[in-house]
Image 1 (cartoon, helix red, strand yellow):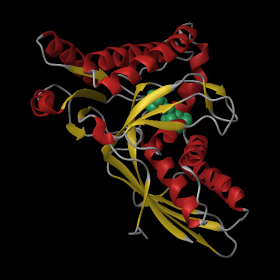
Image 2 (image 1 turned 180 degrees about the vertical axis):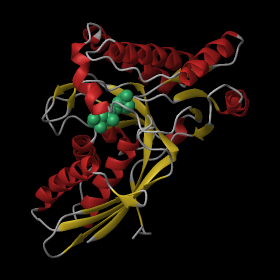
Image 3 (image 1 turned 120 degrees about the vertical axis):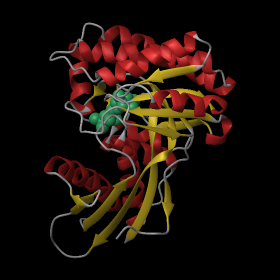
Length: 326
Ligand code: DP6
């Protein structure tokens, strides 16, 4: 009745931004991402006999009420599949700042889904686990399969899941992440998704997303950084333009984010193949070849507002591990 899972965060090259079906958590557009090996969440779930509420410990402290509710609601989905009502004790730890656009909800809900299912003795296929993780947090469905992952929109619960298009060893890319703020973002992505349709740019972004996903998929298979990078940057600007023009508007970028973005553009103009993307937060992910990573990191560390640079390689899928957190 106890299991522990590890899952990586992922960085979206084409973003999920807005829902087609709120209740089922079906996205309005397909998305594509890469798992990040050095950004992970470990979660132990133990189911205990007897009455009482679930206990949820995140990074050493009891979860805040909103997180507690979200975790309990997700455990209820897994319990319903197993036909049980036993209460759970969840202990979870991430090795990166959570809530700052480093996709903590993706790794957290992917690890929670796998650990909870395994603790209840459910042996679910990868697609089923991915769809289940999606109900906890959309982008979590892309942290279940390994490597480079595409999330097809799907028109039913079971069809809307992540599928690996290439394993992590397919392409030794590097994601050099400039952390310009490690504090909690002010507007969560859930609220951002809800506001997206109020932007006059929403429809244009959604209409172009499948084309950008196809461009990224082809570029990943061909290991073509220039094509991947330009589709990714175009999608980043579109997503943030939608956020900026939503009602009420959301601005995730800080002066530190812009320093990094402008530097990336200048370095590229000077011949360094490096491309940026930003999720729902201020931190900037810079994608480059393995051979350029050390010099990109050195340059990034000198930029104003950059507190830390983390480097990630393509990561594996969610997996069970033998050591428990508690
Ligand atoms: C900008 O998956 O965090 O990172 O389902 O509400 O948890 P919830 O949203 P979430 O949204 C991700 C937003 C994004 C883009 C992406 O990862 O595709």
